[in-house]
Length: 161
Image 1 (cartoon, helix red, strand yellow):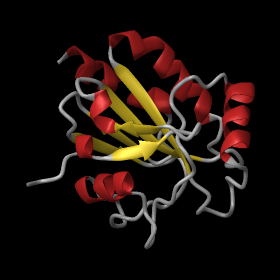
Image 2 (cartoon, helix red, strand yellow):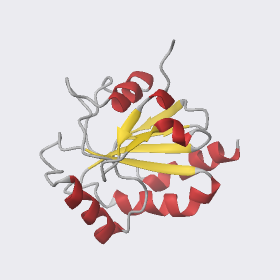
Image 3 (tube, one colour):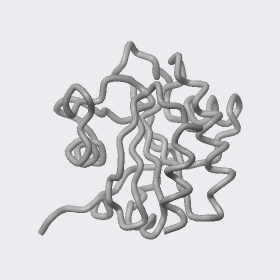
């Protein structure tokens, strides 16, 4: 049987396991995040999208990662506090994970397999984004430089389907 995104589980920042099947029928924007990165201010744009489209079925899922120049050194509690305090983040933040290498989280193995980047499948930096439709299909992968605002039109289109 072919594995789907909905077969996978991740642990939320508070230690609760979350099945991705809970997000069936929603449009997902999955992002590997970091608190001390030049792209960290994108948390603001991600939260703005979440605020604007949550009621229409958008979920933003943040996955902190410390694999790029040690830009996410904090504990899960520190990360959650930072995101809330500095950017008012209310979308789900998961436990810190790895997105490359032998310990890559299964969700990112799946995403990279379905949408490789310009230089192959590995994640090159923080704030790489994956857009998933209501059926769990990976629609597109976005580079870290692509701001959340630039993805809004595509999110709107998927929400209207």
